[in-house]
Each structure stands twice: as C-alpha cells, then as structure tokens.
Length: 257
Image 1 (tube, rainbow, N blue to C red):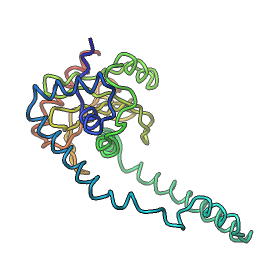
Image 2 (image 1 turned 90 degrees about the vertical axis):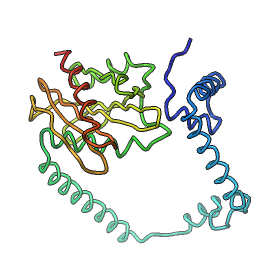
Image 3 (image 1 turned 180 degrees about the vertical axis):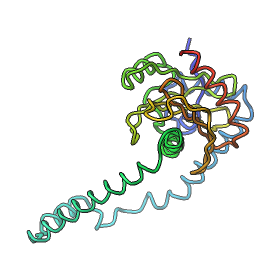
Image 4 (image 1 turned 60 degrees about the vertical axis):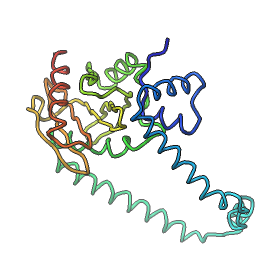
C-alpha cells in the first residue's frame, strides 16, 4: 500500500487533473479528512476556472502572421549579417563574459564560512521553493537512493533531518551548485504549503561553527557546521519559529558524528 505523504505538488496536480488515477484517489481521500486543506484546494480550483474563462477569448484568436513559424524561418534566411558585425558581436559577448567572471569573483570573496552557506541556502530557497512543477530532483519516496547519491557527490556521509515532529514532511532533494562547490538541497513542506530548505555542503572555513541566525532575501534561517559539514535551514517564517526546527535538525545531524 502506498503511504507517500500528500505534498503541495500533489494538490496542484489534483486541481489540474494530471495525477495518475490511483494518486488522484489518494489525494481525494486525504482532502476528506483535512477540511482546511480541502478549502484551500477549492480556492485553487476556482482560480483556475476564472483564469481559463478570462483567457478563453485569447486562446481562440488566430495566430498573428508575424508569429508564423514558417514565415519567421524564411525571414531569418533572408537576413544577411555583415561579417564585421558578427565579429563585433563575438567580441562583445567575450567582454561581457569576462566582466561577469570578474564581478562573480568579487562577490565570492565577500561571503565566507557560515555567512556564505546561509546566503546559498537563501538563494536555493528563492529558486526552487516557488517551483510547483519540479522543485526536487529525487522524491522522498526514494530517500535511501537520494542520501547515497548526495553522499557520493559530496564525498562524505550526509544525513537528511527528519522534521515530521515539527510539522514538516520531506519532499525530496537535489544537488545544487554553489561558489564553494556542490551542495545538497533538501526541501520540506507542511499542510499549509509552507516550504523549508535545508542546504548541506563541506566547509572550507568555519568547519565547527556555532549556530548563527540569518535574515535576508525574504527568508530567515540558521546555519551551523560540525566536523567540516555545514547545514543551513531557511524558510519564510520568523526566526523564533524556525529556531526550534533548526535545533532539532542540528541534533539529528550531529548524532551521526
């Protein structure tokens, strides 16, 4: 029997009718026992209907000639770009790319240790938490494979905190790139659709750093490190609400040392 938790992605998939029949039935059963979530899903459904009704006239309009694919291809074939313009374009791209690397290097030197880890966790939250299509690469249902894969890529064992006692379920995770190398990102959500991100990576500085608060980029959180492995937990809640969750996460990650 399938006991996968119902996630926010499942709720949106239920509204859009894209879930497999078995999963659709599981979500329907879940909503019967959770009226507050069912009310939120009903709001999603109403919004979807309003959008479809508002955009229906536009969808029925014929495609403008300027957006005809065959015409666009033909127009492109007729264009002849002088060679000196092409060379200038390449030079501009190269100069722009060099400038980007210079700026990137300058920014990287500003954040080190736990400060950099907290910023990276906030960036990962900003990129993946709003994503309702594919926020994670490997789902929580494949947790053992996720842990093994992440540990192999980081070249050291990584533990995924269990935050169910704090009301958050593991959605899954992915490998993300940071200016300090690869990092593991784990995402959690609760019954209200609030998401948390835990980012873990090897530390070159602050290898045994005490828990430090972080606020910025619309999120709050805490970062810490033990024996060369750093963790950053961030979310949209206030710091005082996240502190007990971070304490529990650190307690679990330190138990593996």
